[in-house]
Length: 447
Image (tube, rainbow, N blue to C red; front, side, top):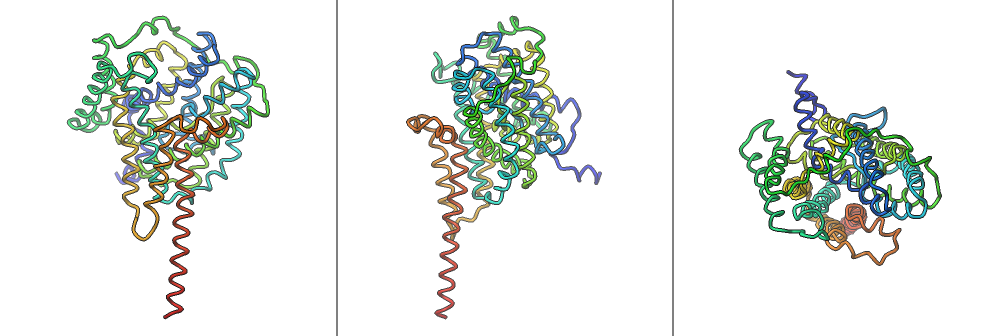
């Protein structure tokens, strides 16, 4: 009994049935985001349909491996936290530009080089932990929750505002119905059933949506049963200086976002994050990115939407996420199963997403509630971090006239908010401390 109490919830190994159900929840939450990067990239480069299918399968397969490495750990790689890995959206535009000039082999060469760069930089980036007091960490976690909320709203409306029929009454109704189901189960159920409120809501929402003709299972029938990811399927990766430098700069953004997500997870599961944990997590990002380049996929980072799922369910075990990794590998090997998961309507995902992403912001607000605001500039630090960090989220085109290279950083509200919070805390609070010290010294002289 004493031994079981000594095990932290993060390290608890649950029965296999619970691991599978909880892991499936994580997969359903992140699936749309996981396949979005290969889909967008392949479409932008006018790749044939069979190429797109291969890219998606390869991405799911590598996603699973990256997630297992991060959650379970492999030698010095992996933060050993319930952190789901997926392709970073920050790299999409640069990879499209690289692909048009250098082809797919040029993209994969740059991906491998950026992964190596990430591993080399990991020990130095991890040392930034001392610049993350509670006022900075709380601001960042809150910003993560607010920044990903538009994703849930987009899903709720049916996908993307540019789509025909976006925001239809039917889409909003099924999304709100799913949200209501999640809330009822969360309020009325207990134990295991309460913890799978999101999964239950997604299943019931999908069933009801199918009754109204809002689901499409036709693609499932046309999809092959087996698809094996082949390393370097499109040729040997080619390394060019400019693409490698560009994607390495993207990985600086990714490292900051991953570090922020690790801090957010640590706050949610009540496990303090130290410098060594950050370093192992960033090393896993780099290693998984190199693996991605070999397996015809892309740079990897932590998925913030899954952070919110932990806040809703309270299921903190990292082995749940490892099971999600196993499921992703299976989906990558059996495309027909992936097609079934992909058939969950966007409004259904949106209904669940509103709660999940909101819970990330709640974790940040809870941390900010522990901060002292009297006699310092902490209030201004929070105001600047949230105000500037939300700019590209609220108005995505606000920095559109800046050079493409600058937009790699300016497009990421989390990166901007993180940097602003660190700098504002160092400048405002340090300057204030110095002023107070001088006033105290002056008062002592007069005395």
